[in-house]
Amino acid sequence: METSTIVAIVIFVAAYALIISEKVHRTIVGICGASLMILFGILTQEEAISYIDFNTLGLLIGMMITVNITSETGLFNFLAIWAAKKVKGRPVALLLALAAITAACSGLLDNVTTVLLTVPITFSITAQLKVDVTPYLIAQILASNIGGTATLIGDPPNIMIGSAVGLTFVDFLKNVAPVCFIVFFAIEFLIIAIYHKGLHTSDELREKVLSLDAKSQISDPVLLKKCLFVLFIVITLFVLHARLGLQTATAALTGAGLLLLLSYHRKENMIAKMLSKVEWLAIFFFAGLFVLVGALVKTGVITMLAKEAMAITQGSLFATSMLVMWMSAIASAFIDNIPFVATLIPLIQDMGAMGMDNLTPVWWSLSLGACLGGNGTLIGASANVVVASLAAKHGREMSFIGFMKVGFPLMLLSILISCIYVYLRYLL
Image 1 (cartoon, rainbow, N blue to C red):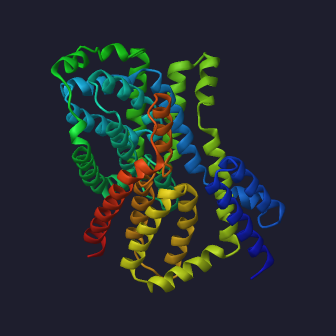
Image 2: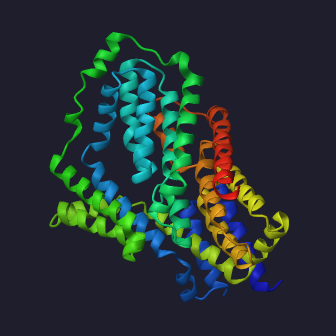
């Protein structure tokens, strides 16, 4: 093994260990790790830049700007109260309604932003009904990750897979959304079964919720109309981007630019505010991560791992798909799924280059495993951590073990359902 290969492996493993330990912020790890790959001569600066997937970064930035502006309208609070009134304040139906809204918004926008906006109103409604908020929080955590799994733009791993493989928004809707629909109802009904004894309230308390005015939550109706108009354009571009010969980043950034133009064309302070709310820490982490993985690609480490994986599965498409799904799910429950997926993408591509035909089931297995696996523990996905943090601010601690007792078995069930789905649809 060449010296450059050994150095690349050492830097990558050290970076991965620091990301898992959380002793150093992952953005700093990504930037420093990428810099070391260049400083040690593993990559030139031009090569490092060439490995950065700017389509992924552009898509994330564009959607973050659009969601940040939309959040200013009060739309999410309106949806939560509207849902509560539609189900007449019944606790069980309310749990399903809030989970469904969370899943839908997470699929079209961003699951972290979605829970940031829906969880506070969930606390408000459950407090008025005097029911335990815990099952609602767990339902929304799981729903956010399931909804994010269903679309190209719902979860970062899907964005990365779609960009690397050339999968479209419609591809994800056709291939992943159906099983997510099944998983959503299976998981949510089990949550209701687990917590049903506490999901009761009085008629007087339900009347208080029914008296809430949903329309009063819309703080800027004019801005809301602009946001909905732009979101319609963006989603249309996502659906048609392959036919139009556009990248998904172009669709997202076009929408972001148009919404900024329509909303704040001369308001420099608001433009700065919206741009400052972009998760730049995540963007720079992604950039550094792409360089780290690129170094492994250049030095041949990924090809070597692909050969080992082919030896284990003996080139069987079924064995490879199942291995990737279960490995992704278990790993994503405990470690960040973004670096894990970033490492697996070139590995699977190399397996295809070695003669494995029809990698379609493997890509969908990676998507389902990496995204749904995040439901296994409280640190499995960013949305989980955000909800736990919001709960703590409201005086309701969510323990790692307490969540895992519910989340991990339900995650395993969702992966089992996904395995059956992949087998029946692609491998039978």
